[in-house]
Length: 351
Image (tube, rainbow, N blue to C red; front, side, top):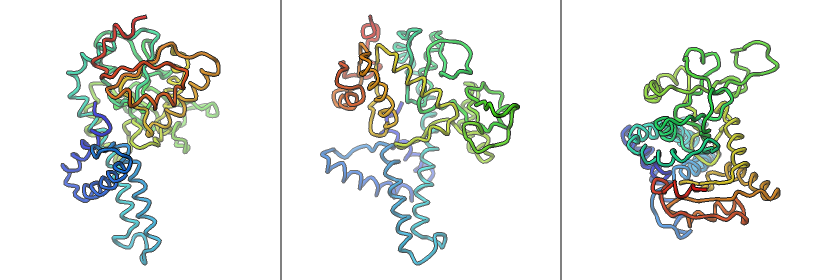
């Protein structure tokens, strides 16, 4: 699947298709300033991380709104600085929406890579857990094709197997209003029950985790739900359950994300072998840094460190400091300077 720098270009291609010249001109100006800052840090100008774009753009919008303080007109009186700030925020919303299309298009074209992913899946054991920040379903598809049971880590799911804990959501999750959920007929992943309510109450109460339900979109209807969601969103029937872009991701808006995160944290508490594949633990993953660091702090205090920690990435040596800061100096880290699909998993995961 595309990396964060590749996602930027893919999303910009969408804007070019739409003829959004104003957005593209704003982005060029933003990239000019980002390149200037990167150059000052000794970095070469190149692709821009979409998370970085999304983060810095909010500060861009904020400055425009501050310029409104010096404007002799009201916010809504034509082409004002406030409106320019609102435009940037609207473009960011479009970026988040286009992210779903880009991920979906890549997933449709990614089935030829399943054999590479299956080499990893085949070596997963029943007591393993996969903690992933990807939105695509290629791992789930590979497990299904080789006949291994898996689940998303929700208590409502039937069956056992390997937990696939998708910490930022999934392209096949639908966030649906509670009073609309039964109209879909899809499997329910999460639906909050309130002990203070003796009977089912479909009326909104102002609590997102209660007012909405998380459904799993079946594979045979997923394409229609992704590609035609604009028609549905007008009636606010559902949204695709992925966290979005930027360093702060409002995961609480995806009902049931708490179950996934606490299962992921528990898996990290219990893991004796940890394999990190193609994940940089960048500053845009501060939630993972904070809570994973908390786990490792506790494990260090209890003298219960994992026996094996392997970092697998073509730039593993450059990323080592990121993981040393989270996992601590007492955990010995093995570096593999290669892509995950190139790893000989039978040898690496041997007892």
